[in-house]
Each structure stands twice: as C-alpha cells, then as structure tokens.
Length: 285
Picture 1 (tube, rainbow, N blue to C red):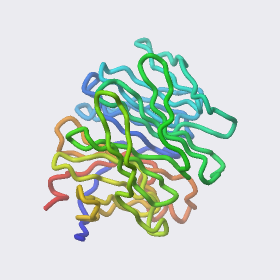
Picture 2: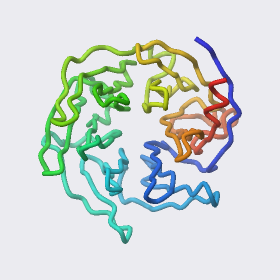
Picture 3: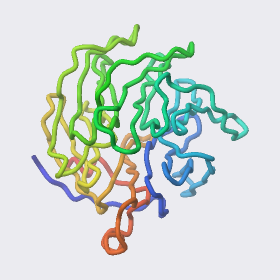
Picture 4: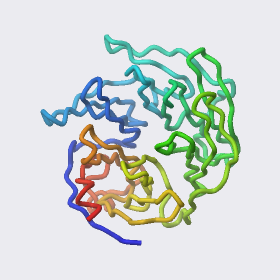
C-alpha cells in the first residue's frame, strides 16, 4: 500500500458539525453537501468560489439527486424533496420508522430508485436497515443487521452494489440486477479494524477503484476491485466523512466533521468542518 500526502486546499471554510453527502449536480453546476446536525444544505459554486446555504428545519441525514435532477433529503426518518422555489416537502416515511432512527446516506440508481440506510441514533447494534424506495412509492427491505449503515456505490458495469457498515469496519458487495433492482449473494468486500478508522462515504473513480473515507482515520483509502487497498490518501483532519468528484473528474471534494472534537483537536486540525479540495490526478502520481 502506498501512502500519499497531497496538497489540500479549503474550498469552503465553514464550521460544519457533520459535513456529509457531497454530490456534483450537473443540472445546477454546483457542488452540493449537507451539515447533518446543523440542518443545512450547502451549494458551492466552484467557478465563482461562492457557497450558498439553505436552512433546513430538521436533522438532514442524506442528500441525493435523481436522474432528472430532483433533490431528495433524508429528514430524520422522512424523505423530502426540494422544490424549484426552495421549499422542502416531505413525501414518504419507511415502514420501520421509529423514534430514535434516521436516514443515513443515500443514492439513486440508474432507474431512479433510491437506496438508503436507516440507522439508530443511539448506536443500537444490528438495528440498521437497507431500503430501496421506488418511483411508485413502494418501499423494499433488502438487508438488515447493520450497526451503522453508510456509504453505498455501484460498479461501473452496474452489476455489483456496495454497502458500508461503519461501526463494523466493513463494506459488503452484492450482485445487482439493474433492470429489476434486485440484489443478492452478499459477501464481504473489504474490512478494517475500526480502531484505525471507520469507513464512511463511498465513491468510485474513473478506473473503477473505490474511495472509502475513514472517519477517525484522517484518510481516504483507494481500494481496487478485488478489495485490496492500493493507496492511502492522508488528510489534515481526523474526521473526514465523504468525497465526490466535481464535473471535470479531476478535483475531489471532501466533506469533514468537527463533532466530538476538543478545542485542542481543533487547534491541530482547524479545517475540521470545512469542505476540502484536492487534485486527484496528483494524488495518484
């Protein structure tokens, strides 16, 4: 495994409690991301170097954009859409929504089906659920027993689905049928001792390698399609959460958290809570 220390710049200097779920919206030409506990939706205009913020009246556990460009938010254990005039409209709740649960991360597949995890906010082991929510409003439960459901992604050919359990330090792979949306044949794709960092957000690069961001690990792991770590990209914050590519495919943006960090921790890592940026091509050299 190769370790690299790339040049990191701060795209947005902000004190997000838990920055998360960065997505590049081609429709809006903005890098969108949320502050979970702060109840905020951020939109970063990289051309202008300006960040705009929309206050959300709830904990925001997930942000996803469907194939038509409509934004979906996970507000507690409700799904909501952001309307064209900037209003937030709740439209669905999962069948197992209970007090103490909320959505955590989510992405749409190519057919416009939302995949998302429901987590217990008190850390109850084995209570996490993997859902699929279809455009016709039907919920499907595809797997259970997760401690902290988190980052998810698909292989480039669309035939394999990946799902992260942060507290167990595991990423699972499933066979995926793009037309029906069915998954099966769960197997362990990657594991790490959580003491070394908890795998959080998950994304795929152009070469088919997976980028797993290590919360409490100050790094991003680049994992090959066989589940082996190809390199470790070190970051200047202890609690990075997720990453995504901008429209050019070269610049990688990383959300970060300051939750649970002491004043001493923040003095050492003042970028905690900010939106970071790095040149991915340079990081691969």
